[in-house]
Amino acid sequence: MIRNLRWIAPILFTVIVFSFVSSQDGKKYAIKTANTPVPKEIAEPIQKLLADSSVQLLDGSGKLLCEMWFRKELPTDATPEQLKTGVTFREVKQSEILGAIQFHVTMTDYRKQKMKPGVYTMRLGYQPTDGKHGADVSQFQEFVLVIKAKDDTRPALMEAKKLSDQSGESIDLAHPGVFMLWPNSTPAKEPTIDARAKGHWVVNSKCNLTIAGKPANGSIGIGVTLIGHSPAE
Image (cartoon, rainbow, N blue to C red; front, side, top):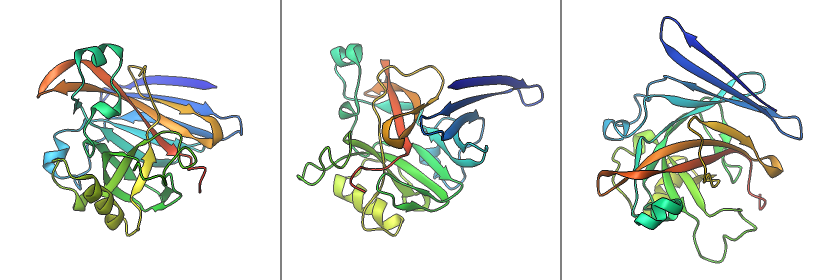
C-alpha cells in the first residue's frame, strides 16, 4: 500500500513528499524529500555535482535512518541508440560519483557489514568477474560503493582496485561497503521507494545524462537497495 502526502510549508516554500510502503511481511519504510543542504563534510568539488535536496529513508515509526543526495548530471558514453532504448550503468564509467549518503544510525550494507553513522560518498562499482561473485551472491552486478567523505575529496575517476580498497579501508573493513543497484528503467519524476522480494527495499531516483560535458537527451534511473542483504550472507 502506498500513500502520498504532499503539503507546502508556507514560510520555507518547501515541498515535502512522503511515500509510505508496506511489504508482505508487514515491515514499513518511507521516503521523504527535503531541502536539506549537502553536508559540509563533503568536499566542495563533489558538493558542486550534487542536488541541493535529499531523499530521506525513515522506518515505520518515522525515525530517520539515512539520507542521500544524488548527482544532478551523470556523464555517459552511451550511443544515440542507447539513449533511445535506455542507458544502463554499463554505459557509465566505473567509479563515477553517484551521490552522497549520511547514515544517521548504524545500518548494514548488502553484505551485512555495519555502516557507522557519518557522511560518505557514493561511487559506481561493478561486481568482479572472478568466478566468486555470481547470482548466488547478488541478483544484479552493479553497486554503490561508499567511502567516508574525509577520504574522498576529488570527483576524479579511480582504478577499480583502488576504489574497492579505498572503500574498505575507509570503513575499517576488508571488503568495500556495498549497496546493490536495482534496475530502474522507467524512473518516475519524483523519488519513490519499492518493497521487493526477499526483504529488499529500493529507493529510486532519476539523474540527467551528459555526453562530453554537454546535456544528453536522456536520463538514467538509480535504484539503491538500502534494506536487504545478499543471499550468500
